[in-house]
Length: 325
Image (cartoon, rainbow, N blue to C red; front, top):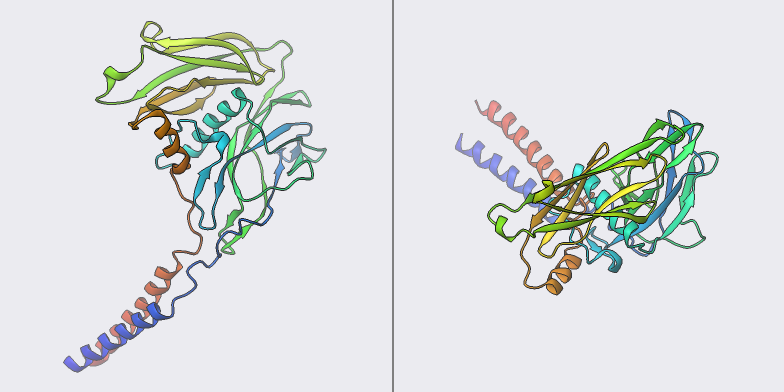
């Protein structure tokens, strides 16, 4: 029995040694070719029907290196973004926050255009070139066939990871999420802003008030100060439903910001953070990029291979053990 156990351990260790000395390719998809051109095609479709004449603008938020690490572009590097553990709904909030800054400050886009008769728009739109990176897509409200269409801003990584083939897609096609509502001539709406604080233990450091701008079609339409007197909230009434309305908070030193939207209510959350100085904070934010790193497609295949080899070895051990018995 002792001899069988020794044989089993030798088989297991041999399999383990083979896996370590001759591993599978660490990056099955390979690294990102940062010098290669990328394209992004939007298909703006509702229930199989194309939405034509819709304007979309593309902004490059961050560069990406061969290993999938983001570094914000100079245009976006100074904003106090809440980027800790960004995932799922966090990307939606981040896109909404970034779109407000891009529109308010009229940041230079990487391209802009309208969807064609098939509801299709491909970037780059001006015969230029796009390189790998993280991009923000912002759509304008449009009217088609008696309906108002409102696209949600979103972030997209170019190239995109193709999990089925374990590869990178340098030509990506996506369908923007959107809402549709029957157009009403002279229809009115409202916009509500709610301020929340994530600063437990530092409540005494809160400013007496914060300034929030309401943009109408990318221009500042109204400004309000939120404070204790109005319970950190405000509602703008009788706004034209056909216009684009965006809520943007002016930056607060010492706080990051996150914007979330539910219907016509925007909730802005400020999180307290500590930096040596405003300048150091901006530098750290730029280097921190978006506080995240892309999942490295294929980089975790070597543990899979190792586990597979180990699993086979354990099966073999079981067979030998039964034979020994």
